[in-house]
Image (tube, rainbow, N blue to C red; front, side, top):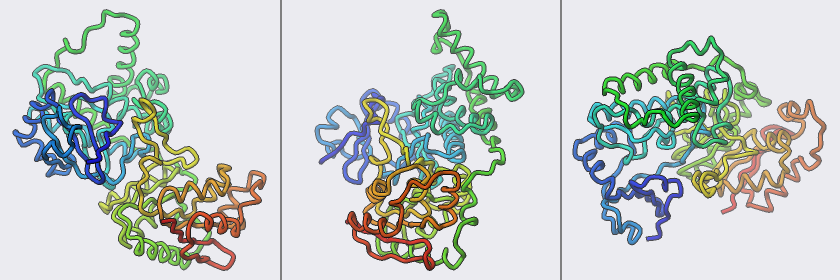
Length: 461
């Protein structure tokens, strides 16, 4: 078997993740075998899986991995997540959902005599908008009187990014991406005003934690956390208090530039219907298991792709307001659409240890098809990306797809050009068609209206 070790799983001595074609494996090393056996034999593992709180697993013969599993005691096989996302790509709503899910899993574990050994946000993934916990080896039997060792990690990777957005009003995505361990209380505390600091949760989990961390750095006499004691009811109280606080966090009403784009655009309903039909015909022909929707906005064409037979959709947009709308829409419908934050001119890079721990967007891009509607002018004119480079990047993400090209006369393009000099002589339709046709076969093209937006169906397979 040609199995590849996942570079993001090296930190855990309890086991490693391997992939082989579409199969995902997890080794369970002897050091973690007793905890895994207890989790399995008490029934908690099965309950969490049946309740869709934990990704499914089944034990398989370690010989499946050959020499790679020689030292493991068990080998688990998991279904492949359609697209692995990272916390710095989540919208506020996704991050909040992930935080609540993590707390719910931990509380249920405590009820069954288990706890979680850590609280990393990277252990939560999404199936559509539904969060699922993915690390079976984070569970271990609870020890009477132990404190919550993952407290600081939970705050840095869940609580603090949510507070930064909802309380302070600062988007956390770029900050989190630049600091993969999350946002520390010491960094967040000075940004919170005195009035907003009166919240018990902010006082205890941000201000007090920041003060304790500063004191521990100045002195080596601080008490070892492993020597401290916390009752089971006390630990549950902390988790429940955090859950109540996070559940009530809401974004302040703030209009973003493109969040109403689906209703405020340069074409009429008949043209929108034509675009939807064009997209559906491509999807029906390609039958993609996974489709990327670049510039998804509130998700009209993500939904069209689902209706036409796409297995699942990952939507990307830069506008946080649009992403909130998309989340509410697809969460209510329980649809297989995951709306993620993306700065297309600066997508998530490969980073972490050896620049390989967290994979960049290109390394995770296994889409079967894409749609890039009302998108290309934003990166070419809005971000000065040369047209040929923009086309190369788009078609590298998927072998088949639809790209929309609005001319310079389009009102939305004019909006981008309103306050800047037009330095884009190559941005014109014939050049676009020539560049795209040199890289892929143009299956079909269609104008939405005379001298209006052009839809192009490409295929480079």
